[in-house]
Length: 364
Image 1 (cartoon, rainbow, N blue to C red):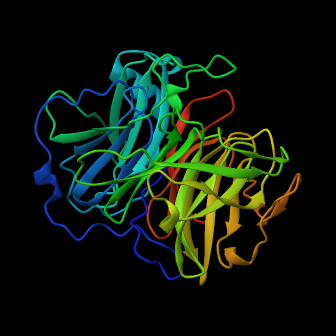
Image 2: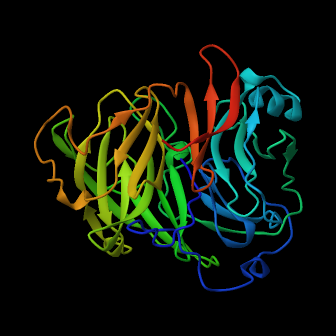
């Protein structure tokens, strides 16, 4: 995850339309934001940052106060992991950068960071500007609200590999048309879940259990969470476009995501096994729409986003099929990706065996 597209029907794209309500920040109250962890990030209107807290099974809305329009200057912060570690009083090998999101108003980059690498690692939020100045966001007295997710995995639940299932209670999130859409695991039979939570928060619903056909595995699956997603208009209907480990690309009509339902997505691509998708962004260039997706082991992929309704559903075992892609060979080691503006992406890039840099690059 992630990821801050302001959706507004971008030609054929479903854009991230902010709710028509004004002064949403007034619904937030000052006090300590008691996050147990920090994972996926996304922005809503008025500089409000939504933060996934998987270990707390909660979503937090934070008033960043960051509402001054930025110029969108190029970003190039060398060794940002080392600088964050120094800010936190530790070393770069003792932190984990979980997500990256750009404030669409100020163009400042926000990063969620764990000080340590286990489920009990203390959380931190850091923001930076184009000049490379870092700032630790204090959570001790910040205007905020939160909502707890029902039916999340138990805090001590483990998968078959002994990994914490609670860490996957929230795998990605986005603010879409007045709602926070959340992907992750639940404790139900269809453990892969999607939720749409209205903001301002009141309470979270139980969400939608989702099933997909995994072409690499040759079977239907309900227990693998969505790793990253975006929203996009396909055949004039808003859809959620989701990527899974190993690497199915699946579409879900947003109108189908009604609490308590079980929904089967349509798999329109298999992009290769032994891979974990990390982030997806949609953009337009030269009159065509594209999806850019970075991955754990298959580099950064560029996929055509027009005419996604013309690809047949994958319903039989296959290795690679469906929507084609081009690998951006020059982009190596991209760990985090977000859209910076209409012409540029922002990336957290790690040199092999080296430190991580934050930089903007032209969208291909």
